Length: 98
Image 1 (tube, helix red, strand yellow):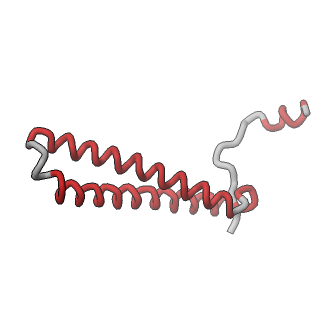
Image 2 (cartoon, one colour):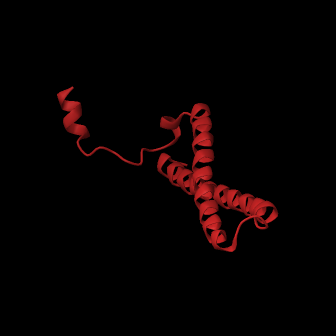
Image 3 (cartoon, helix red, strand yellow):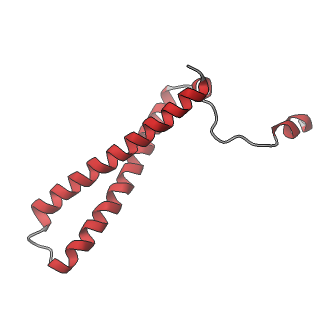
């Protein structure tokens, strides 16, 4: 496999991982909400609680994603296996001026 294919597969896998972590976090928060908070929260605030759970699950998935990504980057030589996603357009001009 070449670097471009490795990069594409990594981005797809990382996206799927992030979505799965967000869903798991949301389900955990939903279970906690249904088990603990429903009897204590008034009806008007229940829609806000679901919105807060959704946003919290997204924030938690981003935090978990960053920790896992830092761990993987410390174990894998990124430049050896992956192609850069964003490349500067003026690379030749920068190399000539050096």
